[in-house]
Image: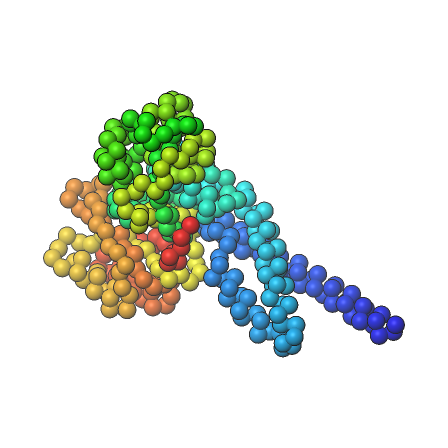
Length: 360
């Protein structure tokens, strides 16, 4: 009995110490949540969690109880995430379009606890963050079939926000209609022009008439309001569910590898180490200027994942360059490269960092 009481006293004392450490840990979690909210970063980071679980197991010497430590630390991290979610729930996420648009879907997957706020166009959504109306904006930057989204690239060049993440969303187009609508009875399909182009073979083979709409979500809403079984829309499954429509035919894309990359931008640049960086710059109008800038990047051991040229809006026949670079430019080596690059560029701006292969 004395041994039992002594063990219980030890546990009581340790529980008090754990409570003190738990409070300190949650204070640090709060700081992390506020940091993520300010920079438009998602709560869940699977790579970080896996690394913590792997590394902390070595802290347990007793092999018999080590296996019980893994669920303990997982439970602790789940509690931390719930606490972070509570803090981030108030985050306002700007996007362009209406409910059901792919930007709306992407924003919901990246920030499941954020409040998604619709704006009529990319510029309005971007400026909502600049003005402080929203905490971050989720905006398409590139499609694997249609290429870059020029308006987004222009906003990144001319605006004040920073990229803190780029996420890939697989685009699956479906033929959707009102309840009871059948494929053989469809006469006309309505959708965004790009969606119509990406499903052109299916539309042509079925003999449907195609009509362009502002975006896929508005097309779905139009179909729901029209309530005509002979008119269908092309949109996502989420959009069909949102407007109470049926999926008539799934995955009618011509290509199965249709992906859109969405950038998350906020007012503050993320300072943690990332495996990719983004810069924009202009060079003097003289022979070899661009080649010189590219050579500087390569000289410091960095490779360009992509480079895009865009016409500037203020001067005719002048261009700026958007470059995604493999590597962390916030390192000492990156700072040296940026310093040297600034000497051969008229304008140079580090606009963001992101982790590679983030799918949502």
